[in-house]
Length: 403
Image 1 (cartoon, helix red, strand yellow):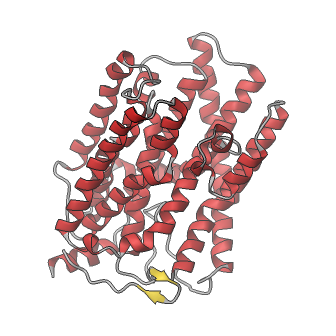
Image 2 (spheres, one colour; image 1 turned 90 degrees about the vertical axis):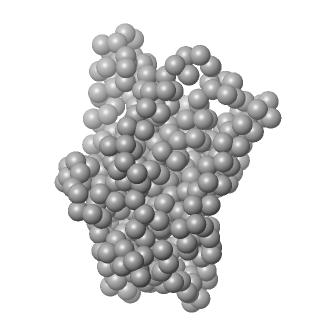
């Protein structure tokens, strides 16, 4: 009974802090690309040299919010998948077109098949750089997300996910498996193949999504991570600071460098952070992440993620790579301001209106209640009245709330 009560209370909570966290994860990815492609700045580049781990955060967050939104409800699979398509594909298409246009304007060759694979959401399945970066280099993660969406209905119906002990077992297995995958990199002698298998390959990244689903179900049923937000934020900072001496001692080309470890082994820490932020919102403890400015920046984060590398590439192609710290700082500032401004325009002019239009025109579009789900415009934008997920259209998963 306690679990059912906690789940009911949680279902009416806004998770604005998770929306705010999305901005910081996107910023980590942006600073990672600036450090590696435009030149380094003291301290900032040291901390964000492996900021690509922000993608791991998004995968964990995606699983968490999808589980939070759809648990205990009934939505035909066709409706669920259409909503996810409406969420990610319009902006993916626009950003890919813009990316290819920038390459053409700079006189740089690009892969047409890579661009097509990107638009088809299958490019991360191919271990070739022409596929991974052929459309929009940042968009490979959406290929992984599309795979997660296909798995999610069956994953949510797993008996193991319905009890605390089962979810705990899932979390332990996922963490051990992540460590095993990283150690397994020693068996892959081809560096490019190793990076693809450990960092891009959708089944590898599924572990992070599954951990997010388990955490989302647990928090919704009353579980709270020990230490709360202060401990979770501290753990994230300590982890990234620990990567600094590690990166100086081991080149990225070696399998035991922190390049892949920073992404594969950070999922438990990020799951703890997401759970702590969600718990704070559920319990009415306002955080700075839930303020209106942070929520707005979080809403722009998806567009920022997709467009920032394009802006960086365009500026570098037009003005050249900066020389010296002063010029590098100016280049960083211009990239940050221009890409974030473009993200705001893309969100309000493309992402948000096209998502609403596609939702109305697609399966389930006649329904008046269409909440924003995991990875959507923002986890904090909760709307009541959602129906529930089913394994096939018209065949609902029957679930019982169990703590």
